Image 1: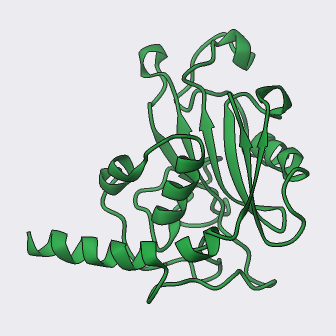
Image 2: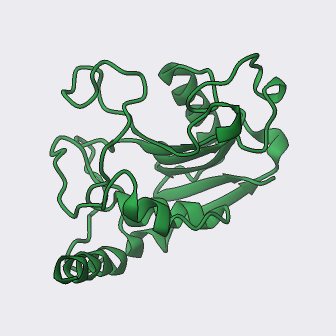
Length: 203
């Protein structure tokens, strides 16, 4: 009980953006893009796959295209909750306990953390119709000066045919990292040139 109370106290600091507030990423320190894939478990996909796009040579990446993260760190937790809220997904309970409880440290010193909750209040939010989506299932992307920070992909409502697939995959899509980054780049033209901007694809 005591450890859980400490965790919630620290999470409160994260959400308030007070002691753990993260300043905007300096030009020489890029963001580490993080995302969530939601799939249809009945067709063989994992219903929830969190990924962190680490460099292929990073020890945690294991040369995988989409390294599955084992724990959220720093401001990833509140930032993903905020992005989920923009599309009606309430992610607190899921992210709080899977894969494990979030940590308040930031072990990726070569990268900047996502914006904190206070900074996200100033984000420009752009809503677009589903017909504009550059990749099946892409629901939301957060950018800073059009550089992707966070993304959400949800294929649960799409058929395999709508995804251009014949068989299911763990993430619900059959794409490479290059495919994903290309889609995020295409979506970025709708984000603000300067500062934080979220692009939301409505259903």
